[in-house]
Length: 108
Image (tube, rainbow, N blue to C red; front, side, top):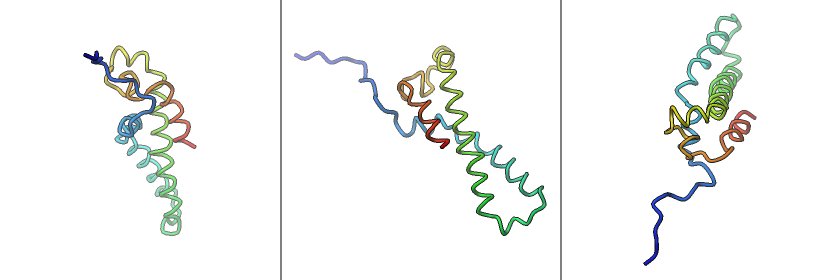
């Protein structure tokens, strides 16, 4: 009879849902809203620049804020191993340095 280990095999790549959890989409709204408020308060007509405004909101929210969330979690991985072991990095759902490389690629 073969022996079956109860531990799952270590992943060599992260699941997409674990990467999305690292980006923390709920945190994107405030910087996107701040960018939009700044654009409105600048007083320039927005109808001509709607594509620029959408691009700025995407840069402020998902790219800058999302990447900073991932880098923060990567640097806090040792603390999270004790305090928040279910997070993607300390739980192993995002293995090795994947989170750091993902943050760099996400922000490029």
